[in-house]
Length: 241
Image 1 (cartoon, rainbow, N blue to C red):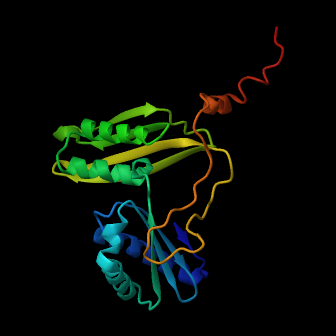
Image 2 (image 1 turned 45 degrees about the vertical axis):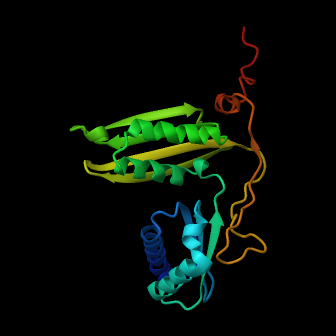
Image 3 (image 1 turned 135 degrees about the vertical axis):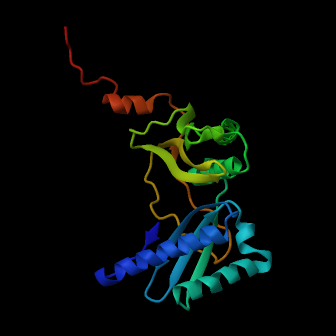
C-alpha cells in the first residue's frame, strides 16, 4: 500500500515515515471505518489515500476535520505539500479489515464472540459474498486456557489463484488479554484483468468520496475452484483400462 520509489540511502527513512503516518491515522480516526491507507510520493508531494466506510467522519463539517488532519500530517512529516484523498467503500460488509475491526470492537465491549462472528458472516453473505471464514484465538469468553476457534460458511478456496479473497488479521484488547482475529472473505472469481492501482481515478477531487472501478467476477458456477485444483477436472487421466 505504498506507491513510491526511493534511493537506497532514503528508503528506510521513508518506510519508517509511512509506518508513522498509518499508526497516527489509525489512532486519530479509530472510529472512521478505515480499511486501508495508501501512501504515494512525488518529488515534493505526499499523497495519502484513505479507504473508509465512513467518509463523513473523516471529512467533517465543511471539510474542517480533513484540513486539521492535513496540517497535523505536515508537522509529522515535515512537508509543506500534503494531499489527502478519501475513497468511500460502498459495501463495508465485504471488506475483511472492516469486518475484523467490527468483530474486535464487539469483543472489547464484552459481546459473545460466537454472536459477533455469526452477525458478521450473515451480513457478508447477505451482501453477495460467496463465502467467509473467521478464526479467533485467545482467552475466548474469559477462559483460563487460550484456544482457537474457526467459524465459516460458504466456500473460501485458498489454492485457486483466480478467486478474489480478501484477508485481514486484527486483534482485540479485552479485559482478559489480546484476542487475534483472522478474516477471509471470498468475493467471487476474477475473469478479466484486475486493476492493480484503483486509486488512479481521473477527475478525483481531494477530500471527497470517490468510487473505484471494480472488476468482473463470476457470481455463479458451482465448483470452478475444485476443477482447478484437480487439474481440469480429470481431463488428463488417459484411457486406463
